[in-house]
Length: 322
Ligand SMILES: [Zn+2]
Image (cartoon, rainbow, N blue to C red):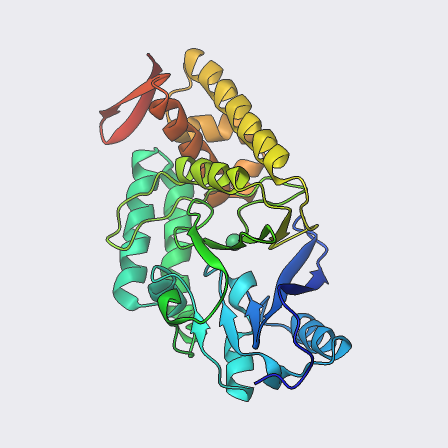
């Protein structure tokens, strides 16, 4: 129970600068009534740990005052400190049910996930680059087994909180945002980032089926924009005060990129792999999984809009204009 003065709907951001394109790793303390929730848990490093302790101290809290941890999604830069916090101060941790096999690195699921990427890259005609990535994932499977989260993770229905949980898949299949309607506060995870577009990553669902991640991401952004939140507490970069306009910008960028791909298809570039190489050039080899997600996502969008069609030839999807 909190001993300090009660404040409602008060957010204490924990911002940890990084030198790469994300600019910062952000997570948040959210105080309401007699709860003090930690929303996301940074990276598992000293910078994030110290930033957490400093933010607590600066606001006259201690680690022992945190009542629960809420996770927006399973990515390593959002869950890093969970085990360390809970080992010092046992509190419940809540996440979407889809987070659990990923956080716990459940063997069956993780193997299905590797198979998913093997098929995805084969059908996209990725050849050697795809095989290399699948080999990397297979090695990581064993190497990272000990990185599985030790802490038990519960689904949100057991949590005591005044935040509404919104499923916002796309960037990750398990991503949620937390919304407080009265004040217009939205904890967005990586749904919206002020200075860069968030990636809609290719991922399977629990059964190993491919999700249309970019289409999901677009729907999720629209859903968040339509709430007209006053403030979006983002997982990276600056805190966002113009969410509806930012959503419009991001949707327009997707439209523009899809249009460029359509032109390439018209010029005879027909497979996802060929499109990725042509469109991304150097980044194709340096950021292979990311660029494949982008290309496949935008092809899904063009397909959904019936601007392109596809047919399988020798096990590979070939795209054409409709
Ligand atoms: Zn993420």
